[in-house]
Length: 502
Image 1 (cartoon, rainbow, N blue to C red):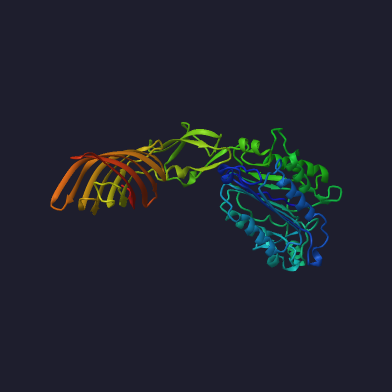
Image 2 (tube, rainbow, N blue to C red; image 1 turned 135 degrees about the vertical axis):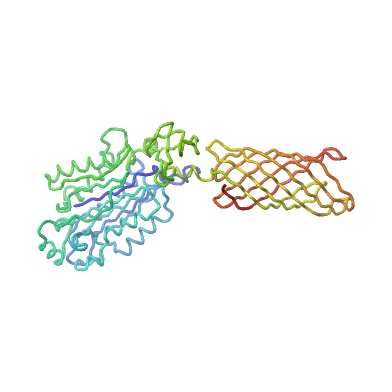
């Protein structure tokens, strides 16, 4: 029996099952599983399996257990499961899945092996409607399933395959495949698999040429039984209340070899970095606290950029908590900011760059000023300049020019033009805010009379900035000394326009 566990260890821990009680819980990473046990086959050559349906039910139970797998969503298909039903369930459970979530697929049933080109082989999982003689057309090719999982936005993917491909146990080979194997000068070539990534692990319950075993006394496939046992707590080898990928493999492998007298010898392929990068089971709060934080997107940075965390060059695995992240190019820091990394959370370092480059914003505005001294509506032009932001905020300076015309009570029709040079201090990247202070002048025309006055103003700019443009909401309170004393001119304006990069 071969069990393939393919996982990308790049994100956050799961949340407890049940309705979210807070926004943090609602936005927390989810743990989602699709569990399949195919036992009923239409093809007479594929009869004889006793425990795949029970394997699926037992796996689903331990994954749902809040103190074991703690999965939020577990869909179990057992007994008769055709290919269409599997793929429909796959699409259903992955709808809305996000990058920080965990997605697990468990398959138990018949498997088979077939040629792949002139010098390769391919693995297949057989659904209920599979035809052994047409396995390549009716079976689920494992490389296709891996591709479908890799295409998901989720960063953590787990694939468990409890199906034999050696021709015994949970495997049956067609006459065509037997002829192919007989014509080989040696054993069948190993199937091509995806390269093990930096945070990937693949666990094999047995070699391709070893048999799978079902056991009446265990009431399961042998390796599945010990996987379930490990997830239920027996796999916690270091006593910390958690079951990691490596712990689960070590427990299930040793127990399988012992139970089968060495007929199944599990192995692991991994490039896993960092202790506790992924926990498959354990107390939810302990699991979240124990998981590392992960800094991603390092490969997507411009050439020559050096990433430092707390003053030293670091890899992607970080202890949870607040760290100072510095991005330098030619010894010049262009990001230098404190970031709080949550346990298990993936933070894309490229997001620290977004919205922090120097820029010019040029926008047209529409405003409203409920004052007896000026018409209510006005149109404006806003020009703003912002230097590069290293992460602690940055100055922003601008010039706002506005004009409006309309009827004033007891005065008649008036035309007003104002100009205000202002400065402020902006906090935030894509979304930000800045208190502002400015000074300028105000002029109005009332029939043949012209009046002018100096102008000062305080305000708050709340804005959203994108690579190509910006939008800002600007409530302000302006004051102008006039013959009638101090005239207060409250206003609010909305500004929209493009952004230019120097």
